[in-house]
Amino acid sequence: MVSIRLAASEDFEFFYQLKCEPSNIFWTGFDRSPEKEHLRKWFTDMISRQADKLSRKIYMILDDDTISPQMVGYMYLDPVTADICETSIAVSEQFWGRHYAQIAWSLVEKDAKQMGFRQIVAFIREDNAASIKMHTACGAVMTDGFEMAYIPQLQKEVKMVKFVKEIS
Image (cartoon, rainbow, N blue to C red):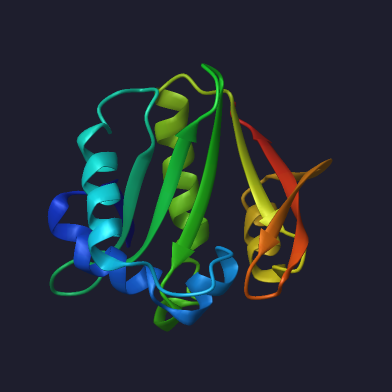
């Protein structure tokens, strides 16, 4: 069974390790692992404000089918307006292909609905086939909208395609 919960300070080491995985660095557009203490300060600041509806939420994705729940990824929920939130998600490489992201996305969608959001937006690199497939499976629809983002590893800008899911 997969579950989610808001991140807590004791989750930092897992969060940091996931941020250091080569795939996470690549898909998030960075050229190297984050500086640990800088990320710790940012993480601590983010989790201290999670009770505020207008602040970013960091959800930890857990596999509850083990003897003790095991963290497998994280997902952000960022308020954009009173009705719209944006998400991004990462699952550790060792857990790819097990549908953790898809299940977590549906759980975060329920939380978003309870918080009063009516639409979820995600910007996905146009070359990220796995993420596009997952978001589509969750009911998000690719729109004509996009943003360009410079990716240091690629030394060029890439298109970030906008996906939207209406929450009913």
